[in-house]
Amino acid sequence: MMCSDQNTIQQNLEQIRQQIHAAEQQYARHSNSVQLLAVSKTKPIEALKAAIDAGQTCFGENYVQEGIEKIHYFAQHYTEAKLEWHFIGPIQSNKTRPIAENFDWVHSVDREKVAQRLNDQRPEQARPLQVLIQVNTSGEASKSGTNQDDIFHLAELINALPNLTLRGLMSIPENVSDYPSQLRAFKQLAELNRKLNQRYPQVDTLSMGMSGDMQAAIEAGSTMVRIGTAIFGARDYHK
Ligand SMILES: *Cc1c(COP(=O)(O)O)cnc(C)c1O
Image (cartoon, rainbow, N blue to C red; front, side, top):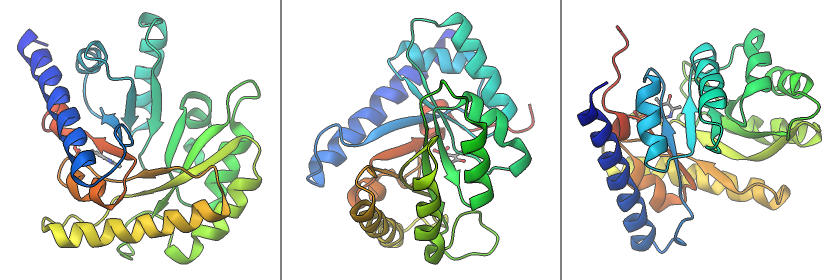
């Protein structure tokens, strides 16, 4: 990769951080209450290096094999960097073991079988896996995510599993571009997370907001935005 791309990644990161900071102030959020997760799926090692060199430590990956290759690479070559790896993609139940063994966080737990397997396959010596329940806020049958009615049932199971720590909710709302619709969906999720926190005090994380709807997510109370395109540029799935 050429140097100019790496400069671009650094500049993009700087710009996103400023936007997050400005949104925190605009919506009376505490400063640094919104964490930036860099979504690096499909992007090469060089792109992640540029982000790490610019101070980024938390990365989100969607594909198990690709994510694990990156985790292993940086564990070997960037031993000084304290990186945190978040699995944010759909989970097939026969792929839970490598996720349980390698990642720090999972945002996309949406059913009991997956939660149980992640717990059983988490290595003994590892810190509990930090878990978010993925919620289907739009009610579309095609989308992954737990129905709102089932959240508390799944939360109860996760809370009873010793190798998982329930931290909150995640959603990928419908792709709408008008601000009021974005805000409505995010506020709904924030309200659910508030209820979850009343029952489980360790719940402190609301993963919502991507490159196209970060502002509305922060206004509604997001504590973790997942940003890919605005940091690394458009993804090319044909490479
Ligand atoms: C790809 C992806 C993102 C990042 O989306 P951008 O629009 O590129 O910022 C965030 N969350 C999830 C779950 C994703 O799959």
